[in-house]
Every structure is written in structure tokens, then in C-alpha cells.
Image (cartoon, rainbow, N blue to C red; front, side, top):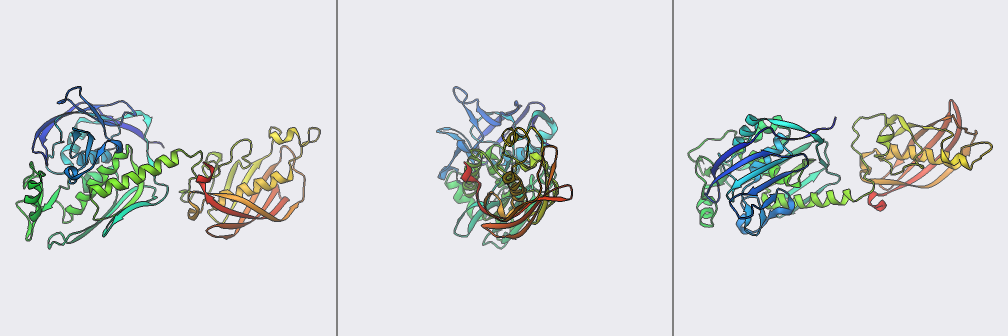
Length: 443
């Protein structure tokens, strides 16, 4: 079942101090129409500039190295990551944020204040399908001992390793699927932190002017100063909070498994660029093969068209009724007088061409081998056939049973044995050879 887009039920007024600027800021969250996305409006500036929360608006540089900032020139908004993370966690797709100031309130240093305010106001579904991007192939970035990668996965999951040369922090690891229930219970309340020796240095550089021991976990050699942690590993969980918010700047949720080691905002956003590039590349393709079929054993024609690039009038498999992914399968081709090849083969006595029987077997074989996840993002080219035999004539009204068995399956090629039957009688058979290439060849 397709998820629907969501927005908030009514306006929400919030205010607070920015963690880095120390400025008092007021903001109002307002419902937005489907497909609007998340957008900010700076009401304190002339002309009330609108800033879209997406990758194109992300700013980089030394002055934004400790937070995520969007805007253009001096029309910017600092520290949006906790807020964006909450929107992702609650499944909010569309929202207008009217803000008087250049930084979102830090509140308690986590996302909890935003989460409670939105839940109190209520969330409504909209009459539009939610947009989600499924990671198609692994991408990532690394620098020294810091890295972040994302791999295809049916759910959004994050596995993060934090490693500080500090007797309190040391090494922490947390791994979780990110859904609404887990986000609210395990992630939303985790607060920002810094080392005691970092605090004065950050304020000297102009950061942390609104930070204090209440909204920031300051870690000294003996523990957290004037505060207590919500979880023993709250620090690594907060890193995941940040990461979720950063990646939500894609403009939609992602399905994939993130593996991060000591990654911060800069690396998170570098990964986001890679994901965005992959999204654009695949959206330009005429055909994007799907490979995540789980234990599915039957495929209708809509499923088949997600595996094979063939379309009318050359799609010759109507259904797959049995499947062992990458091993064997049974497909069906319903032969009807409406098949266009009967117009010329032969007008006075319609007979299915033998070469098209072979093609139907080849397409059924393609479904079987391409559902093997080792061939993710590939298409299969029919290279040759041996031992081809045609044993019976096939007429309109017949139903071809296309039985295929994978004899060998390697990274670049596969060998298949196939039979086509009408009832219990074999009408055609062949040994077939295929090679694999990236689906981008069809672009």
C-alpha cells in the first residue's frame, strides 16, 4: 500500500535561542499543500525570501562547519538539522516555516521540543503519494579514518560508529532501522554535545553563543558537566539524529542502509550529493530494473516490466507462476489472435513463429536470472542458442508454459535450459546463453 504525504493539522508557534548565534528567534509552522516540500520564509528580511530545504540551498564553509545551513548570500538559516530530522521521523513531507531570524531555536539541544509541538498540533495525510528514493547501488565518501556509505536496503537504517580519544566518550556504536516509533523512543531526545576543551575554542570562533550546560552536553574528563545523559550512548545517537536531518535535504525519505564512521555534517552532505546524483541519473533512464523481490514467487505483468525492459508489442511473457530466484521458473505466454505477428504469419493460417517461441523462453529466463540480486541494475542480452528444436505448431488460443532452469550463473554471463510446452507437450526447447550489462546501456 502506498504511503500518503503528510503535513501538520494547524499552525504551531515556537520561539527560543539559537545555539550558535545566541539570537532569540520566533517561528510559525504552517500546513502546506501536497508536493510543496519543506520551505522557510525569512519574515525579518525585505521581500520575505523563500528558502527551500533541499540540497541546492545548502551552504558550506567555515562559518557553517558545526551545523547545517541553507540559504543564499546573507539570506540564510542556521542549524536546521534537528528540526529536519524530526520532520523525517514523523513523516512530514510538506510544511511552511515562517521565521524571524537566521537560526532555528536550539531548544534543549535535541529534536524533542519540535516533536512534541508537532504531535500536539496533529498530523494529517494528504491526497498524494509519498515520494521515496530507493538507493540503487552503493555510494559513499571517506577521508582518512572518517567515512560514510549507503547501500541498497528495503528500509532506512543507520549504523554509526563514534570514536573519540576521550575517557568518557571513547568508542560508541549504534545501529537501528529508522521508523516513527524508533525515532521517537530512541533518537529524538538525544542532545548535541562537545568536549570541554572544544567549548571555549568554538565560542572564540563565533559558535555556541547560545549554548549552555542545559542544552549542550559538555563532556569533561570525569563525565558530563552539570547534566546527565538520557542514554549511556546518547552521543552516538545524537550523531544519527543529525545524519537523518542532513539526508532529509534530498527532499524525500530514503530507503537504504547507512554505515558511518565519525561522520559529521560535511561528510553527511557529501554523501547527500552522491545520493542526489544517483537519483538524477536513474530518473533520466527509460528503464530502471528492480531487484529487491524478497521471497516473491509469482510475478504479474507489472512486476515483469520492472525486471525486463521489453514493452508492447515485444513483451512475450504475461505472468510467472513459479519462481526460485536465480535458479528456475515457469512463465506463461497466452497466445491470442490479437498478437500482431499473426497479421503476416500467416493471414490464412495463423501460426506462432518459432523464433518468437525462443524469444518468449529467453524473456522468461531473463526474469529468473535478473531477480538474482547479484545482477542488480543489469539487463540480460540474449547472445546465442544451442540445441534449438521446434516440435509442435502453436496456434492462437494456446497457452505456452515457459519452463527455464539456470545451469550456470556468473557475474557476466549465464547459461539456461528452456522448454516451451502446450499442456504436457513440448513445442520448443533450447539451451541459451546470456551476458549482463548495466541498464544504463539502454539510456
